[in-house]
Image (cartoon, rainbow, N blue to C red; front, side):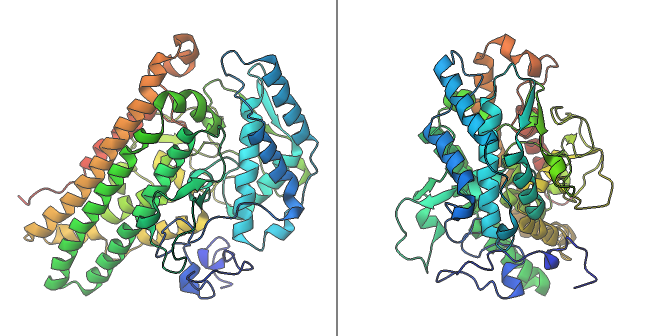
Length: 499
């Protein structure tokens, strides 16, 4: 163990070591069960509802978040924001500035506590940033948030900003307890979920997050199929190839279900409400088209901390499930090479990603620069989807690296079986299903971002549209062009019939 790099997953702290496990939870005392924090029943979602509140020592953070939600704080750029609403927001921000700087030492023993701390502090920070008057060009995040937030991020190796895991993976509870906590069946509970934290308290916002949560749970079967295919690939005989062919058709069916779940967001989330009232809350500095800077006051109080350089908001591009499908099917070399985006050490966080296609694709996740996690100099640019891996929980990043290191990659096996038409066709069926999933994503982006943006006053859109790129996604990319490009390049991975 002493020879392993400090950030190797075998050297990482075990999650949940001091929290008693409920019946049916995988045994985390063994190495194999905890390596990647991927549960056989719930996939990248935790096997039981995430912690809903920190212990009393950190109650001031929880109280600040609860106060923001109950006060129904409004976005600073809300049209016709009343003086009373402005004053209420200022009183709340002043209360945040007066919080004590709480130590996080006793959080470090538990991954679950650290996750909840990241969730709460990130949510408080976004409330603070997005209620700050638009006339303020430099947003100063106060030390009571800066110091513990960056310290928690250093422990989790995550950026100090809301991520997909904050909004989706660790932001749910059951509406009613499932019939059996021991035999928890994800497919049976897809519509028995609610969110723990919301900015607006609307059903629209909740359904936006839960649509992704349902995709994660339905995708558990895809992970099981992938594991079965890898087992057959190890055998590698004709019988194994026939089984792989069958499994690929099953995988395509699961991906088709994911597409239907993605499309169902329309049933509960109104596009206009999303664009105007929900989406602005979880924008990061990278996707702030006004160019306002986020300044982390108090960072000098802890010499181990560094100025954050990764400040994108939550994005569907941070879903480990979709990345796993890309990698397993071998299409990541295509889909992840679309668009470079600024990484740590690049231009200012408010800069937008370029739309130039990548000449090559990097498959190495980039760690967030919140502490001295790596001595290697950062690359100036990386593909957007690769960069988004640095916003995933670190154990899930380790899983993707493990998947990428598979000595028997599926695509190579299929390519080598030139005469096995059924296998090649089954592979293309699975890739086509993934391409059609991205077709639906293109339609969602058009419906929820592009069309509402056209309805917004052109003056408000001047910053993001003056270069002809259109509205920005929460991750800092030109939303429509990006998802369309990823979709098109996924289609480029199809093998077709042998010539």
